[in-house]
Amino acid sequence: MRVLITGNMGYVGSVLTRFLKSKDPGIEIMGYDSGFFGHCLTGAESIPEACLTRQYIGDVRELTPAILDEADAVVHLAAVSNDPMGKEFEDVTTSINREASVRIAKIAASHGVGNFVFASSCSVYGAAVGWPRGETDTTNPLTPYARSKIGTEDDLRQIDLSGMVFTSLRFATACGMSDRLRLDLVLNDLVACAVSSGEINVLSDGSPWRPLIDVEDMARAIYWAIRRRAEDGGTWLAVNAGRDESNYKISDLAEAVQRQVSNAKVSINADAPSDKRSYKVDFSLFKSLAPDFIPRVSLDQSIARLLKGLERMKFVDRKFRNSPYLRLNTLRRHIDAGRLNRDLRWLGM
Ligand SMILES: NC(=O)c1ccc[n+]([C@@H]2O[C@H](COP(=O)([O-])OP(=O)(O)OC[C@H]3O[C@@H](n4cnc5c(N)ncnc54)[C@H](O)[C@@H]3O)[C@@H](O)[C@H]2O)c1
Image (cartoon, rainbow, N blue to C red; front, top):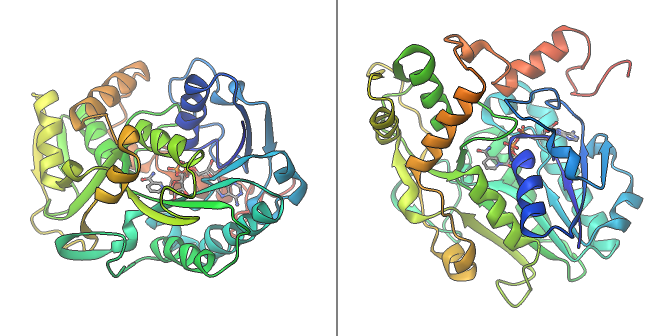
């Protein structure tokens, strides 16, 4: 099987590449990435790209259609991938996350690609109090990032994709260790706080609900989706990817971190303005469609893997919230140094 992964040099792609290769050593993987975070390796002894057949460095807004001739499946991860970046680069988020995604899916369909996997997000549920939201419930995206994800799904639902099996995985919030670790994710942030300062500093009042998924389990779901048959869910499918037991309150996460870093104290910011982004999610459809691929990594295992990874990195930076481990900071550094413009295109290279 030949798979093209866009955004392969990110947090998820770095884990996915090794995961796919370990499951199927014969798989041919091609990567396509602009390389914004290519240099942000975190303790890896070799680059994940070493197991690729080919690495393209390019912008998804300008992807050459012929590249898709070589692929049986496409995993489309490339994106402006969180709310802070989406807020700062709102128009670019629409053009990269929505317009380029729709264009690439259309080209893939016309070039005979069998399966297309789109990395969507449970953040499309936004502020969703009460019952856990399922795929047929109304969405309520609160941010440009979340709107770009649901917008892409909506656009592609209305287009004839010539029988290509399209799967939009609405991922829970990612967590866990990667060769390109990010600390702008809630659990990763709390573990990094505990390790670097001995204080698990919750930025909100701890009350919002958030479903979590370990990055290895994201790779497992993608492995299912690149081989999914139309009989299992239809040619167009949007499915929540995670598990019901992994809907947590942020304060529960802080306590789970404290259980493994027992000398660390939890501090909750009771005066923080309430975070409207709070949602519980129903993952029963995923469980019924992909029973052998549901998440296996427990919250405690994710925390343990993060602790081990941070130790390997000799991580001590108390001011990590100002560091390149937060993706927005890395983009700002590129821009301030004159390497990237505000349209997120490389300059002079
Ligand atoms: N991390 C999460 O919590 C989470 C949750 C749900 C969904 N997702 C989605 O999963 C996908 C991967 O997330 P991630 O955490 O690995 O993000 P990431 O930011 O770590 O990686 C994204 C990659 O896309 C590349 N990229 C960005 N713009 C590009 C462009 N114009 N052309 C080519 N490449 C470009 C970047 O260089 C980067 O390597 C994203 O689509 C994200 O929205 C992530």
